[in-house]
Image (tube, rainbow over all chains, first blue to last red; front, side):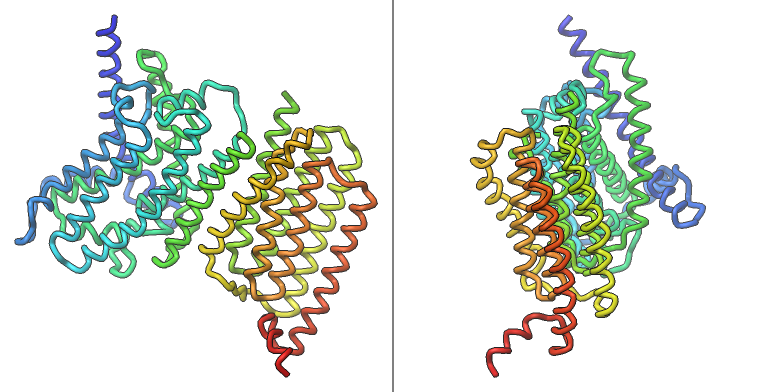
Length: 319
Length: 220
């Protein structure tokens, strides 16, 4: 019986991991398509990221002469980190074997690991753009990380656990309660998500304008399969952040391990949530304007403030 | 359950009130500042209505109506008219930069929550946890008055301070007697009129609403 349960859990884990890798570019494509519609363009279609990945994988990879091994392994580490993060999050099912391995704090650490490597690789070639991008990325992330931790602490205090599966269970299996602290935390999380995924008020993922780019500046030197892996990892990161958001603030419809009947429902619920969230993200990016880089600390300071306020309100009101 | 739900709603509204207080601190534009003040009044009206409904105290409906009339419609309208006449729309100058002010705000909130903890244990109403939030928004309004240089934003700070006090009164003691409330409402209204006259006087004397000009008065 034990073995069967374990095998089932592993199958679920595999299902989720493969689903995530397959779906992540679709989400990016969907966001891009929604943005195109909102800007009165016809748009490239939701499958465009797959075409881009396919094209990039077929190309010959070019490396700078002075590229070190670090530069070469970074795309794989990046992809691996994001995939691992996506395996920890309860996306379609709680109680997956991987999710026991790490709690939310370790999850932040996984994201940080990926960030350190991409920043090092950006500085590896020695171009000024790479160093500039790495510096800016570090500026953004060192402000975003404490805010993200505060958001996690708020949820953890309410559900008495730092394990994401327990948080999901605590929220989805109890009677509906209005948590003002969670409302604060969710706004903070949204702001952090925009900053960490290089979305519009902080960074524009579609730009190659030298003065404004952050993420794009770091990956300028990459080509072919390396670039494809990095793009894929960015899609996975967006997917992971969105699903963390669902797990913390809207954990309904996530199946339990071994409950095959709930699995189709969980996938449908996930797709529905992602569709809405992607459209919402595109809408948000359309109505917001790109900030000056010096305003970013203020933006992320506000996110930190909201997260801390959520924490304080939890202590005061107990809700 | 209905009591619990109303408590939840009041808690949520209180949290929004605190959020608006922070938004006011971080706001750079005077027009948005006034809109935020109107929104704060609206939240106050709703929360007063919810308290009135959940505790079946009908006189609170009157104060809710008074709040709606005065703080959501009348005062913002007056302020809008004033800034249109004075032709100041964009200039809000802060003494300290905004992130620092917000950090100071967090410290104030912690201080207020700590200060209110023993007081709220004395109160027996369902909404006693809210005294801390009310105190925090009063302190935040004070902070806004301290850190702003222009007279108009200081007046908005003063008015939102009164909002915080009103919220403390409804949440802790289910509202003051109607006579007191009427008196305060009238005071605030008259004060705003007088402030308006002051604005014109200040501008006529100094060609600007920056109150730092007043510091030079004593030198001559």
